[in-house]
Length: 371
Image 1: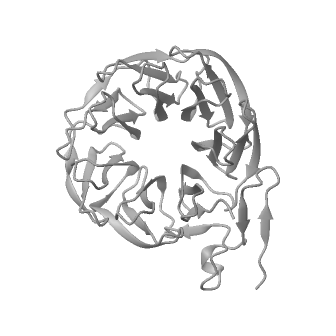
Image 2: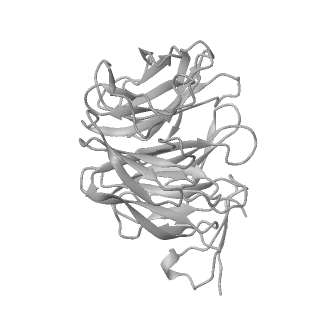
């Protein structure tokens, strides 16, 4: 059988095989350029990676629907990146935007909080084998929810949740370790438009701070945590725009956490951290010809610097960091799609992080990285 090998010179670690979709490959051929799943072409908004069945590999949770009622799914990994078993999440289809995977009830397995458009968060408890039962909803959590960040805000070992909403205040939910959350606390912000973000210790005080990427002509935000789940809200200077996603990491190699915001206009802007919870300046580091819909960070080539994966409204890209915060782009396989979500993790069990794309209106895919 003919097999085409794509060697990407700007990204030498990425050796991808084949050019046809999964359905067109002969049985048993695992040298695929990508592995399709969820071929029902749902309006997928996000993918979350977690070992939900306890077998040691990463499975995939898909949040489907966006503004339309569709079922969400847990896809179980065979260990080699193939997702051949799907289990519906929840009793009824709904308009979902993201799924936060965490141990809600402190029983040692991964549960799920489904963040939905206008609807309250749906709580799902796992029996340990990847089968989820509806445990209830979180009242007061609807209202144009577009994303969520799970983290331990106060260092008590219990995971908490920050809900990002395009309209209205942000919502902080403290985990109660009994399977749910305490009542939501609103965090007032100037303007709205929150759709994405990230968490890291930005000011170096040992607790987790929050980056909030905002759209609709609003400035993006940095929420500095006092270690007791109280957040001081700061607008990021020079960030007014339509930033759908953002990530935190040391991108320029100076040992300080930076912020990077991705715009629906296609440009990526790096805000250099000053180490004290602020930013020393901003510079554009990349301009895509397509709208950037989703963003993830990881050291893809093992050189110690943080790289990026962009999900776009066209061709998805890997951005390889030279260590100073300058990036070279490499097109990723899969064809043009509208990629609302991206996640990075070892799906194939080879010790190298792979890429999973959530495509809205076309099949979702796993892109294996490495040889």
